[in-house]
Length: 383
Image (tube, rainbow, N blue to C red; front, side):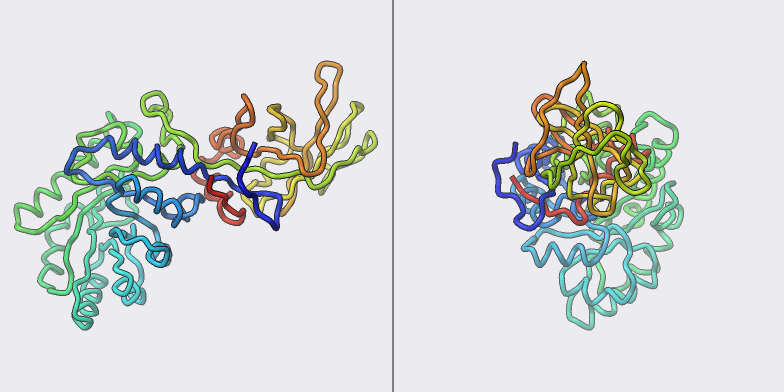
């Protein structure tokens, strides 16, 4: 169990395995040729893992660029000492332009109004604003439509205050690399880039691969790949699991804050959705709940690990606390817990393991959401 220093003010925390993160980043770096670059996506506080500490680890493995979702995520990286190029994966409001220029953040651009306002402000400050042009190739989320790229570049490229540092798109179905939709997006992107180059427009860094495309389709690595969820040891698709091993980076643990032996028939938690059966049951309280990412929909449906064994969560998960039951039966005798004992919500304990994927299936969601949720309030310990 953990040998590192735990939080002093709360008996629940997230552990981040720095070695696993480092090895995962190197695995993506090793996919690339000598002139290709690695962009590490650290949006949403590095998917709940802590943006600045993770970015520093990735920097040490040779990361060339970072990508975030919002301007303030980029500012946080700069204030944390990150000096590599930082790409905002969307076009922010015009009111953010001064912040972009102050912190050397590159926005994605797909409206001429923003592009020209960005250029004007850059000229007034005696600088040039770099950007990446987002191209819409079929996901219908953001970007300049692939058929309109020449018209768009004609509208903005005259401005001396802006410079195209890259062009990119994003795949909707890259886990089906042989599928029609994926191939159509690739074709549209290739044609849009070729059209701009033929017309004499600078494209800069050409990139389109997310985590799963980076693994499955080396033909679309172009100048750079954008690795995201895989950096944190979470597989982007079932098909990648057997061909590209990754190490989970996040574990979630808590210490027992109270134990009790309620009488048979007594209820546990709000609504008494669990009542103590005939068997001898020890109820243990853990100090984390749905405000920490342990979704309420998991109530009475999930396990935690204690001394290498699975025990059941019981009762409705509360905002800040949850309860588990150590049940003794004729078939299974278990050691009882004491206040201060560690239980594992996500991660490994001995030979037993509970994964993000398991919890995501119980919640009918994806592991991205599970990881982000645990990272919002629980203190992170880097070990």
